Image 1 (cartoon, rainbow, N blue to C red):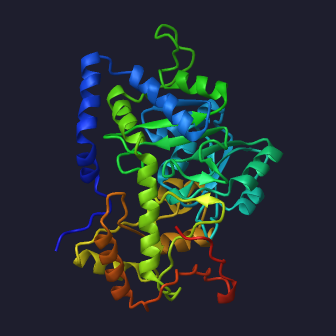
Image 2 (cartoon, rainbow, N blue to C red):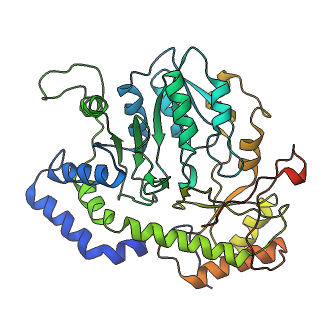
Image 3 (cartoon, helix red, strand yellow):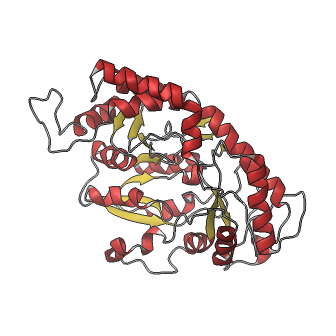
Length: 398
């Protein structure tokens, strides 16, 4: 029986091989590999795609976050509010500029930053908010932006998993002072190596990021500030330009696959399986298709026995990471985040995935968890601290 990977980058490459090879050849023929025409063209195209005035290519999504913070003059003594559930880089970038990460709990439906909890976390030292569009689902940006305006806070969107996602008809990255994009290979728009980009409509932020990515120099002669090398190279930019043309098609396929999973799973018992939900007004791009399973270990083992890959994103909520022990958080601080990380499991989903493979994954999950069959989607799982009738209402799926 053939295996089903979590993501298949080789299959995507085979479909684009001729275009990718032509783009690489053109760069080698030109002989310019750093800060050349391919990078400049990609910056224009990404800015247009995201709906921002500027885009600045950098070496990684992590650098996109860190340089955005520095461009917003966030540093030692400052506090930055962010979610307790994300990849480590979100909080790591805050710590890297000398600021203090302040974590808050997540919304139980979208798993993104809970605006009500953000409001309560603001102190006189708070200088910024980093909302994370987790798994490809947009944050609820309207209340977050209202909170930021009222308290004069910067907003830096972490779009690492969500390029192409939309909130109320606008693409993520276009709401805050800046947006950080990752081009890690497995992302919806992935390079063949590391890469990232900062998108913004503020000329001063774009100018500062360009300065910071080049050792603090504008002309390679004088250095205005101490910084480092964080440039997106021409080869990666050229290949990303090829792939950008297909991004909407790929995101549409991801949504279609997620909808297929929803149909195949049908009505289930919320104490056994919870499917991802899409809030009204949001467009999820399913970088990851994440289910919640109290019996996660048993399900992972059952999938592995059938040659089906799965992965946990993420094992540990950020406030409980050893690297942040000095911040003083304890288990129980953010129950929604802790429950999610105890139960979340990512199933295979990528644009080229075959319908029969989706059906096979759903069949193994249903059999392992002993799920009843139905044509209706699964409802959300209530918090363990709430009564069962208080579970969140279901939004539109896929």
